[in-house]
Image (cartoon, rainbow, N blue to C red; front, side, top):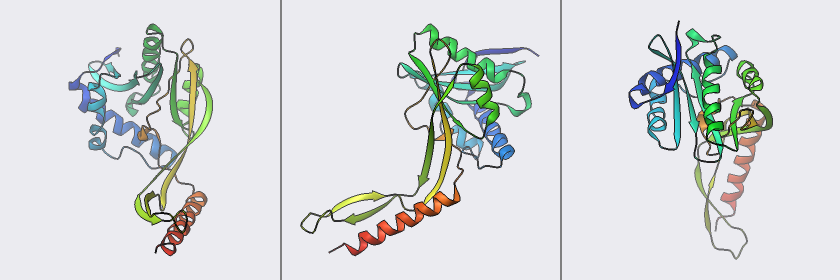
Length: 227
């Protein structure tokens, strides 16, 4: 088997989307969580854009001419961002992920990046182990919350004018993820633009109940304050 790493082109988008879906689905099923990429079509919603965007670099891994993995690298700031990085489940444990990571880390050093940061679901211990070996260190926990947004009207004081605001009612999910960073010389990266697909929808039942209770109380308080 011959593995090579190269820059992705627009024609690679369908193959990358297929691998992305299979990789996310595989790890979600393995750990008993929901997946953020529910279908190949979902992956096609963002992968072609990232491949063609001038601020991103996308590397693909090919084995005997077949795309088996990809790594998307955000180069829009001095602190680079990695992800999503995905590997075909059929070729995992063959150092494909490591090769993809080393490729973009070498690129960040060659271009004098200040650092690299990424977000990782804390339950995915396999990936965390690889990132640790590459020089990444855990910096802070990250919680991702998603839910519907509704308009409500409230008063800040009896004499205040009415204002409109958005309220996050029942939060549908939250994710405990891990943000890891490293110096440019020891490998690292980090996106700061809220790339949602790094976060698996894993709600904490207790926290979710609390959010719903809080949201309901706020909505009720708002309704009673209307003129």
